[in-house]
Length: 219
Image (cartoon, rainbow, N blue to C red; front, top):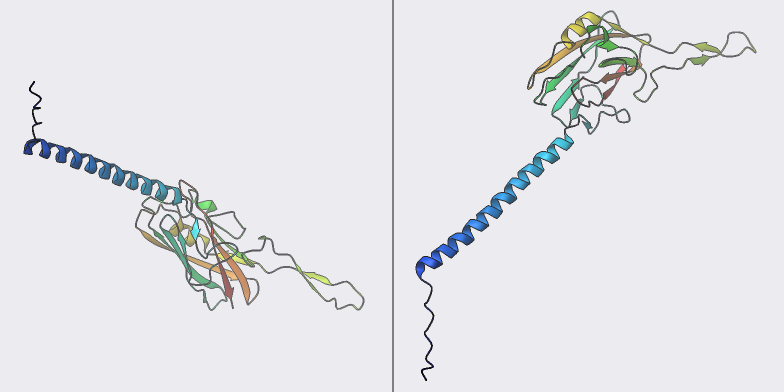
């Protein structure tokens, strides 16, 4: 009986090349899918953070000082310049918007009649008396009565008057295009010297927009 087996044919170089090409193709496909998944995840995470929140100082509990800049997580920055005292005892400063969001914004909203205010939360730009954490309606202080034995006399709380509103609103109202800057002039007059005032800025946008706060010393 012939028990001699026929040896298997060794793989040819063509078969070997085909195997390596297949392995290489699979590896490249996996790497490409991984890279695309990473890019999609990065875009998704970036979209989740583009909410218009103030990053760092600028919140109501940590207001910025004169000259400070509020940075938003969607690319917008807002700077309030140091106040300058005028001869009539009013104070002037500027609010500068730098729109790096990639989208058009409405710094003053859509109505010129509601662009500025001295009442907390009532307008895209508010300048009000008191500290940032104050309710927005300062309580009167008590002074000693000139009549012996009488109760203390309530003294009206200091306020602030927003002057030249038309000039501020004219600069504030038009749309602000992407990658554009705008400086809005503001002029106010406090009821008393040495008053603290709070500046609230909340430019309108298609999504959420947090309010940035500055606390200025007008003295």
